[in-house]
Each structure stands twice: as C-alpha cells, then as structure tokens.
Image (spheres, rainbow, N blue to C red):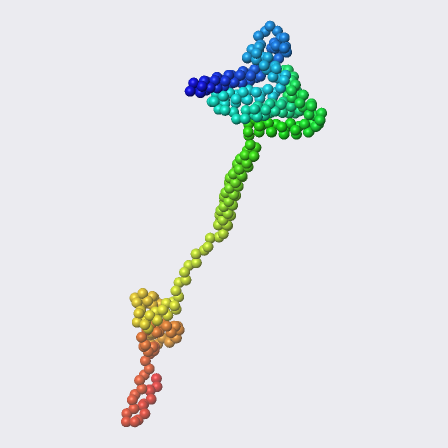
Length: 311
C-alpha cells in the first residue's frame, strides 16, 4: 500500500514538473530577443533581459533556434503529453519505440523546414529554418538524392515516425474520412433532390395558373324551353292514358284554341291548321258552320219537294 501511494505521488510530482517545463520552454521561445545576453552565444549588455523567463529563458530560446530552428516548438507539446500521462499514472506502452519515433519526427521536421524555407527571421534575427541539425540532414540527403529525392525520403520517414510515436492508424483515419464523406454526399444528394422536386412543383403550379388565366371562361348554355308542340304531344299522351293533371290543363289553356264562330253574313275564313295532337285532347265535336243550311221539306205522299222561292 505504501509503495502504491509513493508511486502515485511520484508520478504526480513528475507530471507537474513536466507541465511547468513545457510552459517555460514555450514562453522562452515566444519572447525571444536577440539583444539579451546569452551564455556562450552573446555577451550582451548590462540591461536586464527582455525574455520573460530571464537569462535561463534567453539561453534556452537561443540554443533551440540555433540547433533546431522553428522545429523547437515541437518540444513543449511533447513534454505536456508525457506530463499528462505521468500525472494520471497512465503507463506509456512501448516507451522506447515511441521515443525513437519522436526523435525521428523532430529530425524530419527540421530538415523538411530547411528544404522548404531555408532561413527565417525571428525578432529581427535570421536563423536557419531547421537549425544546424536540419541543415546538416538536408545537405547530406541532397548530395545523394538531389532535392526531389530528399524531399520524398524525408516525408516517408516523417509518416513512419508518426506511426511509431503515436500508434496512429492512417487506415482507420482515411476510412473514417471516407464514411463521413459518403454520409455528407448522401445528405447533399437528398437535399438537392428535394430542392429540385420543389422547384419543379412550383414551375408546374405557375404554368397551370398561367393557363387558367389565359383560357376563356365557359359560357353557360340556357336549357331549351319546351315548344308548344312538345307540350301538346305530352299532354295528348297523358290524356290518352287518363293521367292528365292540372299543370298540363293550365299549359294547354294558354295555347290558342279554335277561333270563335263568325257572325251571320261574315265571310268564312279557314281557320289556321292546328296539329292533330291539339284535336286529340278535345272531345270529338262537329265543326260549326257560319250559317245553318235550309232544311229540305219532306216529300208528301211520294211527291217531290217544292223548289225554293226566288229572291
């Protein structure tokens, strides 16, 4: 139990120290000043250093830029990750393999920066982008493989160093990217299809509305009124069947009937011809003449009748 507590306390102690060292290194690099007095590099003046970490920070930043250049910024995050594992008492599996991977990563990044950038300006002072270490590696590779071959080799070793140091799987990474891209593509396809369908529906509705505005409104055709002949035929059929009603009688009452009998002495005018159906409704009666013909005297005892007197 005592050993477990001591191991835990020691791990937390180491973790806090590594966090502090990472923070100090980062601040020293960020506040570098070429006018500060630096041990073994610059005698400087009597003024206090401008670096926020003091003389130690000036020396640390100057040495980092001289040896590794901009690649020095890789060390603070590395120390922070190791301190995180130590603080939470998490073992680091394959520690030596990861240490080799980290060393290869720093060397590849520094040489790649030297190939790509050459020199950089930091706070008004020129440095090699990859420091003297990166410059030496880049020159040695270019002498054998030229610039293009050296670049390809450095990138290849950098990828391998990432796999060694972090146990990162590029296959899982690209598979995850592919699945995400497929989901995004399917979602975009559904959105585009819905948008196109809605656009087509709007266009169809506009065309339908335009046709409705241009098309003339249909005129209402009045129902044909029944003709007197049709009414008389229907009334005659109803009368023959004994089913005439008051409505038919009222309609027939409005129709023109036989003209009245003329007075004696008026000229006889033929009445207008009426359809046969009109007379079918009336009772069979002999037509009245305008005047009654004289009755012939009956013969007495077989004698012929007397002739009419002359006027």
